[in-house]
Amino acid sequence: MLRDSFIMTELKEMKKLKTDFQHASSRMMSSKYDEDSIYVERFVSFVEQTPFLCECLQSATKKANSQYNVDKFLIRVPNSNKPKIAIPRDGNDHIKGMWELLKQISRDNTLCALSVSICSTYGQRGDVIIQNFLKDTFSDIIAFFNRNIDNELNSLDAEMAKTPTYQQIITYNGEVVSATPAMGETVTINNCVNENDVKNVSDFINKLCLALNNMGIEKDAKGLVEKNLTDIRQQVSSKKPEKSIIKKAVEYLQGITSKLGENTQFICLLNELIKLLAAMKLY
Image (tube, rainbow, N blue to C red; front, side):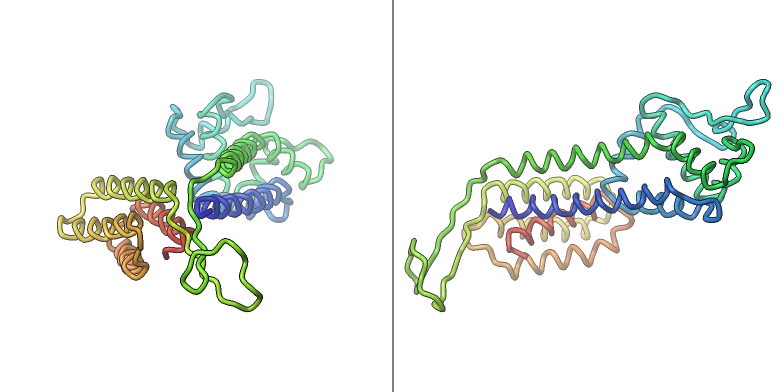
């Protein structure tokens, strides 16, 4: 039950991301001439501020071989007064090339100028020129992000289909009961900690400790972080977890992250751990 609650939260967030991404990408691809690069800039910002999309992008681009600059994007075509976009057409280099060009356009506000220099034909409206350029140049990176979002949704759906192992004890006036009490009478429901959730918490804490080891912080500060992580692990594993101890440990970890430097991996892992603890009703 608790595990399902955690996955359902992840599913809800991923479905919202899918909707938000479709809105941001659709708005960019339908940019108008008098808007120039504003919606390219907003799309780039949206991707950079969304951890899941950043992870997908980093996973692909770190395997790319090419280093890009503005001179590599445009090449002259023999017997033509128009340049053309020079982005590798295959694999990770293709993704990296599209992303670097999007950032270039966003940074320099050059969507109109670039679109006209490449795609304009006599009598064609500016809006059509820009939208044709965006479609021809960036459709593949939109499809790349959509594919990763759909794969994650499918993975979460598959997890939801698995049956968790948990116990539920219903007590009425201090005694275990199986029948529903009369209307208006008080019932307490105590959910024993799901074994899968305990394992997930332990896995997150192991990853946090590994991230901590790679940060090179002072020994005393590291020791305090490890102590609070150990407190959380012990409470989650106990028969009667003390929420106050978990809450205190979490608040300490949240408070100290600002002093640990810009460590995205540690902060992201901590946020995921907090969401799991909240789904388990332990925080």
